[in-house]
Amino acid sequence: MDLGLRNATAAVVGGGRGMGLATARCLADDGARVAIIGRSRPDLDRAAADLANRGSPDAVGLVADVTDADAVDAAFADLAQRWDGELNILINAVGPTVQGDFESLTDEQWRQAVDEGAMGMVHCVRSALPLLRKAQWARIVNFSAHSTQRQSVILPAYTAAKAMVTSISKNLSLLLAKDEILVNVVSPGSIASESLVGWAKSVGVDGDNPYELMKAIDKHFGHPAHLPRAGLPDEIGPVVAFLASRRNSYMTGANINVDGGSDFT
Image 1: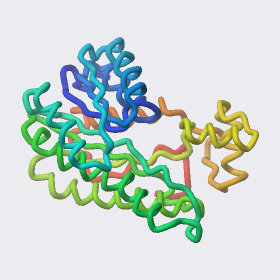
Image 2 (image 1 turned 60 degrees about the vertical axis):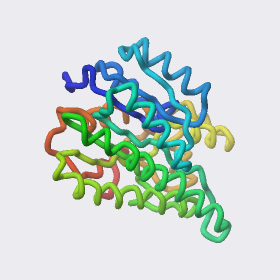
Image 3 (image 1 turned 60 degrees about the horizontal axis):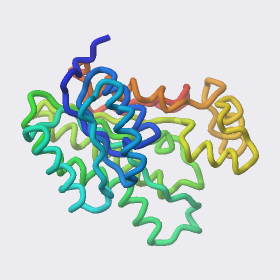
Image 4 (image 1 turned 120 degrees about the vertical axis):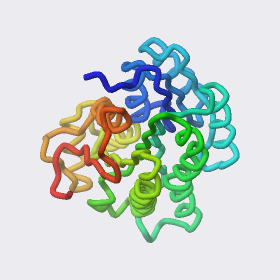
């Protein structure tokens, strides 16, 4: 399916690895001009080279910590110069790194989770809006999480931050409807990300095997999917690419679960 992405401009925040990179690859495969934004220069350089080989010859990686509003402003000012002040697609794939149960979390960890998971997205949308409004068509896709609908006792701060992302995105879909900028949310389930695979290996499980990984998730967290395996980052990218594309012309304010099947809606 042609997603209408050839020569579209796309910024993927958190695109240096994981689900963000999987999304950036899908956009590049369809001919979009892709910029990835993140904190790790080595990850960005590797990812940009990969994207260039896939169909985004001017792919670029820009270093910015999303919790730093000035750094985010600078990154999008750079993109404005590169792309004549226009941006078709903004993907926010950064998530908080804080874990721990309610009683163990410090105030600083709560603030960190909100800064990384929600305020980072706010900074990026705010900086990108003038570019999105100038483009002929524009889409925003933000990453939330299935834990907002199925709680885990070790992720209260992470989940709270992701719930903020979902709520703010819903509000943005209403605010930006008049500009015909579509805003949607993707909520991944148990995906074999680097962090989840690393956790599995730390408890003696072959995290590279998605079936064994799901067994460990069921045992430790009680969050099995209907399918008997964990998902892969490459299974998230195509869903996000569709939501970010011109093919998606009438879906906004939606929260799409990509979770292998679950009992929540």
